Structures are given as C-alpha cells and as structure tokens.
Length: 285
Length: 317
Image (cartoon, rainbow over all chains, first blue to last red):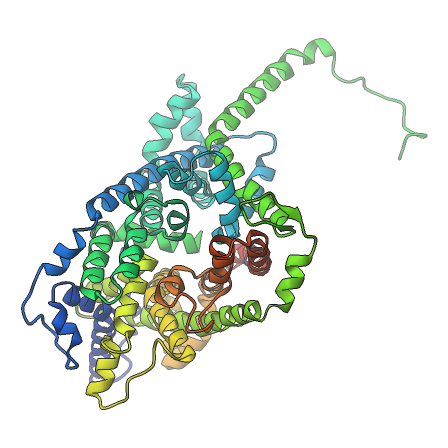
C-alpha cells in the first residue's frame, strides 16, 4: 500500500526543513524501538538462563544463551496444544469463511422476502459482547453433549455476523451484469457462484481468512470455559495454565509465549498488506 | 377513503388471458430465488440463530432467575438487579470499567493519530517502524498480558530495573491498586496503538493534498493545518475509532484476567471479569447474566451512536 506523503512545498527555509526531517526520523526510531522493547525482552528472557532475570542489574544480552526454557516447556504437551490450536483454528476458518461468503452473496445479489429484516437482525448481533452470551452458550453446548470437545469451541466460534457484513459490502461491488451474463450462458446458481463470483472475491477471502484465523488463534475466554481436559487445551489456554503452574518461571512462560505468537507473527509479516487492509476496511466500510 | 364517490371504472384491468402466464412464471422465478437465497443463507443463519440470538434471549431470561447451573433454575424477578444495586463490588467494577475506558481510549487515539501523522511522512526505514507499531495488534491478549507480567513484575520486571538504573524507587505494580491499573492500561495502549494508527493512516490517505497546498498558500502553520484540515477531515475515522475503542475497553478480559485476576483487592476488576467469576466460578449464573445485560445495555447505547454515525458518514464521504 502506498500512502501518499503530504510534503509541503518548500516555503520554509531549507535548513529548517532538514531539521524537521531529522527530528521526525529520530522520533520514528524512538517510537519504533519503544514498541519493540517488550517483544525484545520476551525473546531475551526466553533464551536466557533464569539467573539473568534475578540479578538487579540490567542485561541486554543473555549471559549464556540457552534452550533450557524451551526444554522445560516441552515437558508439557505443548505440541499437542499447538496441534489443537491449529486444528480448531483451521476448522473455524473453513466453516466461518464459507458460510460468510454464501450469506454475503445472498444478501448482496439475491432478492427475497425478509432480506432487510434478516440483515438487520444479523447486524444487531454484532455488538453483543461475547461474554454476555457465555453462560447461555455454555448451557447450549452442554445440552448438546459437546462440552469438553473441539466442536464446543468450533461451532459457536463459527457464528459471526461481522464476516457476513464484510462479504456483503464487498460483493455489492461486483456488477450485476457479470452475474447475469453467466446466467445467460446457462450456468446454474451454484456454478455462477463458484466459477464467476468466487474468483472475483480473492481479496475478500484473504482478508476474511486472515482476520478469522487471528481471532480464533488468539481466543482465550471461550476455550478456557469449555475445554477441561489438559490434553485438549489450545495454546492460549495452555499458556495461562503454565502461568498458573510455574508462577515465577518467566523463562518457560516466555518460551511458550514465543511459540504461541510465532505463527501469527510469520503470517503477519507475509501478509501484512492484507492484514492492514482488513483492519483499515473494517473502519472505512 | 374514496369508497363512496369512487369514479366509475373507466378501464377494466388488463384482460386476464393476456396477464396470467407472465406473472405465474415470474412468481415461480421469484419463489426459486427466495428458495435459493434461504439455502445459501442457511448455514450462517442456523449458526447465528443458535449461538447468538438464542443465547441472547436466554441471557435476558437468565438474568431474572436464580441459577447455579447444577440444579434447575427458579424465578427471581428483579432480585438479581436489586442485588447488583446493593453490591459494592459491582459498583467498583463499573467504576473500574469507566476508569479503564477513560484512561485508554483518548490516549490510544491521540497516540494513533500522532504516530499516523508522523509515519505519513517520508523517512528512513519507515516500513520497519510501521511494522513495529502494527505488530502487537496481532498478538493474543494472553501473550500480551504475559509479556506485561514480565515487564511489570515488582522484583525482577524490566520497568522496575529501568527505574532502578535511573535511581528511582521501584513501583508497586502488583501491590498497589493504582499502579496495577496503570500497568494494565499501559499494556493495553501498547497493544492497541497499532490499530488506531492503521485507521488513521487510511483516513489520512483520503485527504487530498490540494487541501494542504491551499493552506500553505494561505501561510498556515503545522498546528493550524492540523486543527482546521486534518482533524475535521478525519472526523469519520475518529468517530469510528471512538466507538470501537469504547466497545473494546468495556469488553476487556484477557489482559486483566491474566495480568491481575482483578486484584489486588478488586482494584482492577472490570465488569466482565466479575461476571465471569460469578458465572463460572461462583456458580451464580443469574447474577452473572444480569451483569452481562447491564453491560449489553451500555454497549447498545454506543451502538446507537454508531448507527447515527454510519448515516452521517455517507454524507461525509
């Protein structure tokens, strides 16, 4: 994304402009480094022997870099937690994004009775704090016999209105003529959707998948509530579990925190453009 | 209305023979489209109804009941709400939620705007600095809170060590209520600044450079341009952020739960953590639901504002 810089024409004397430029560059570096400091500190502690942390002096580099913290963490079922998080998140992304795309398509491109009413109803759920629904959702999930299983996490998490809203807004931008042309050529509704509409929706699919992935990977309160078996924990829940067990063992906690954020950081760095667009779009449209 | 003096029907409706096949075909097509629409909507509609709408209704009902979640619920009328009114801890959590909101929202917006303005200019290594500001936005609340615990630990945390090297006394991040709240607020600012910057950067892109050129011709300085061009034209972004940030701050859970568990005392307890503890640890589900409903009403008030805003923004552009 190219953001046009709003440089003013050179009315101010050159020297003053140079000074302003230096001030800006320094300010940017200070802010950037301050933002990086907590992350840097997490990395440092994860790779440092515990003793480093307990000295009163500041060390900006491990006295003896070590993987001990990771070894301690891996005595716990961390791989299982990672797999759980991965499986749950992927299921949620697939279910959420496909149901959002279908619903968005209906709202954007089909005329049917009750459309506006349903859409309003859908929108009205967007502002309900999820925590308000937690006790009833918990009861529902229990009465369905899902409590403690992956599906207890996956199914409620897949019910969102935000994605439908985003999908509808995006698909409104697809000209009706394109869809009519496909219909004229004899394509059925399904065929039109898959062959014509979906290929045009690649940016939408990317944004929806990324944001859903992000939300689910990071979700804490709901998995904490419905998962009771330690071996079924997600990484977020496992982290809090370790935090409770190894209270002062910051090395282990930071090693696990690092493992848990790594996938998001890698995804973010690879798809930064889409992430930023996704967030920006959530504000603009 | 005009039944008594209706003029004689001059023209009969179109001959039925001429009329019937087309509407029937049209009606059939219409029916097929409606059917297709509901099939398409089906999966999402079922999920949303079952896991959002039904629980919302259940939450309202539950707030009028006594329920431990173990035995069957009994009707409580307004008892839960009356209990709320008399519960000093509840009022404390309302106050804390308010404090948290007031301490985070304006500050994160100001930081977001400042950083967006700064990073809108050309400078060395700009993509790197921007990325560093965005990055905390994608971390989980739990990871962020754990990093926070590490930074704010009273004995071995980085911040107290930094204070120490400056010759300042260590701050009581875990034992004093005010300091504990400050630590949660600071970590939230760190986490949320990026989001505010993204929205403001997007908003800044929408301002045409000619506006600034015109202001330059008029001889306007930095502050004048900021006050008379940038801030007014960023109005939609500001309003959107205000709503999003307020809603977020009313719903903050992970950070508080992991960093302080609401303590020390109840000094960082917010409405959501209190509701959570009542509902899942105290087994007072009706009471927890009542807290949730009060929160929902507050959020709804802000949603009403957002609704008005989204009408305005069509006119703003």
